[in-house]
Length: 329
Ligand code: GTR
Picture 1 (cartoon, rainbow, N blue to C red):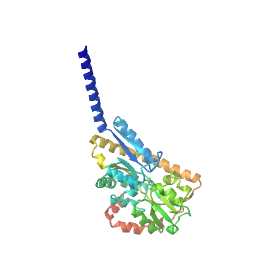
Picture 2: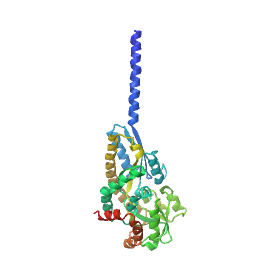
Picture 3: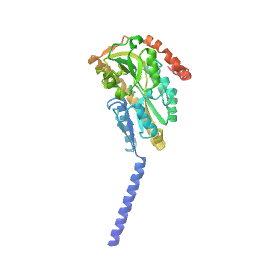
Picture 4: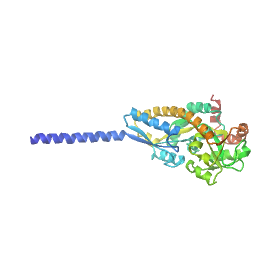
């Protein structure tokens, strides 16, 4: 009897050891991907990444999942990219606007009026050029997963409607953290100040800057209209969003997981674009309802002309790339 007990105990212990070992193997493979975004949940980018996480969880029985650090909980986009480069954060979704300082070819996408339309931008990023540029991120310790839409950026300020570049004279305009945008502002007649997105509302409220530029959903969800009520549809930048993974962490993943993340990324892009279109229309309707001064009487040709020196200045550096972008339908 005693012997039988001892045997049973032994079996139970070894069973527990096996269970622990299995759990250890499981946890070595399981990964909770932390991903940051400056936008709140409910924005097309955050919702698309959430969708990506749910898909991954389902495909891997919970081995891969994504938790989103939204609403600038982890600070601005520049900091997030640094964390991802170091491997302290697995993933982030940022604007291509802040990626130029890491892999400068991305600045070709950050030039004013370089894309003729949203469709042109999509054809470029979805084609050979986009794939080449994503691959180049590896040199910057990043794995480029994909692009998302962010419409076109236009100026807003607290003083007046902007119709021509002259109207920008004397205005201090917040730009994304990349020197190329400061040049863009000078050529247009204003002065550009790089300020983190999370500090912008207060910067406008306290008069550090007179305005900024962004797409309708960002302008509207951040309630920037409360402190800068004139929105003028200059559409001077069509800068896509991008989501990237930490190369350090990526290199520890199985090929199977890497492939699934790639597959999920394509789905995330599709999802975001679908959500984007609805969100943009909703934001414009809301802004109108709120009585924001939306000005579509803009002399776009004057802006295109005024910004030619920026494209020329950087054109030499990215000449070949710019020619290829131009040649895309
Ligand atoms: C938004 C974009 C953000 C951020 C922001 C900004 O359109 O979605 O990623 O770049 O603009 O101006 O900082």
